[in-house]
Image (cartoon, rainbow, N blue to C red; front, side, top):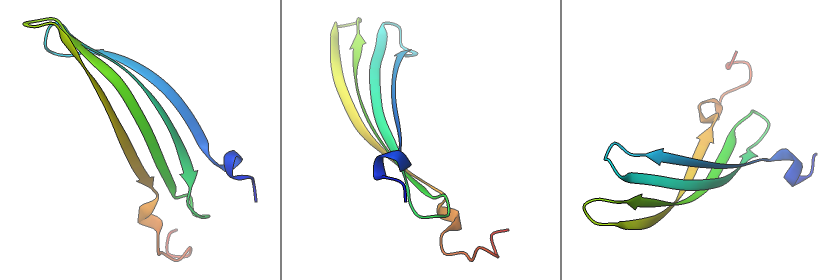
Length: 86
């Protein structure tokens, strides 16, 4: 068995977006990791993101947002025999 950290995947990212409303801009970043669940390729993916949304009109201001995202892949294969999956 490989060590826990070697089996996982890690990522970091950033984005900026101009919304459909004029004068609204968003800046954010994310950190995440994927952890394998068993031998059949299922994976748990967890991501954390934080950012700021700035706006100009009609009033100047900004807001901070954050969130957690959770994803599961390979769930459709759970509970099936390896012979039936082919």
